[in-house]
Length: 179
Image 1 (spheres, rainbow, N blue to C red):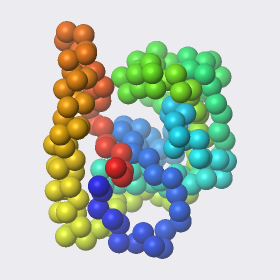
Image 2: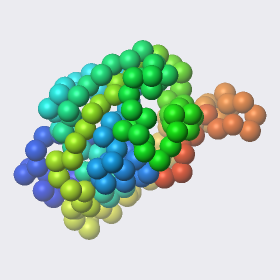
Image 3: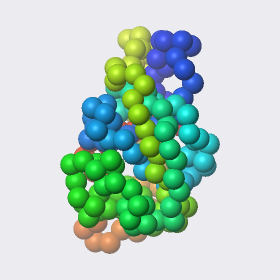
Image 4: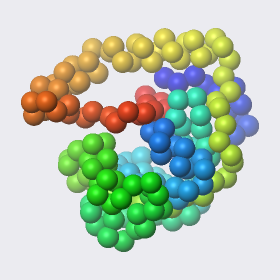
């Protein structure tokens, strides 16, 4: 579990999302204005006007949802959404390849949601106490070595084609906040 920020009680309530560093930086700079995710139960709770706090490592940025659009697949979504609003540094093909590294076909089958976002607050590091940070680091180490997680990773690796890594995350992945 992540360390609890010391100013949590004074912050606006927001949906929490972990995000890769490269995408976090684009959001924080205000150039990534559409976040895409599979339409799982957490995303189904997001509505226009909701707040989303994106977290990466010890950084976070607060955004407001300006629009929600649902699609049956990533291909269909890219037929309708601006590629540069999702990632101005990559082509459609590059983005699809990156997305497919993150989401396997069974997750994409849930449907896709394009979330229009705008910055509410500038990005900032999480404010935690040194003790809480140490506890969080120990908890994260424990979570990574949890027997169920280890078994899932091993099963995914065995199911992968030779030379491939199932569920592998691209470099710069920031683990999602929370359990």
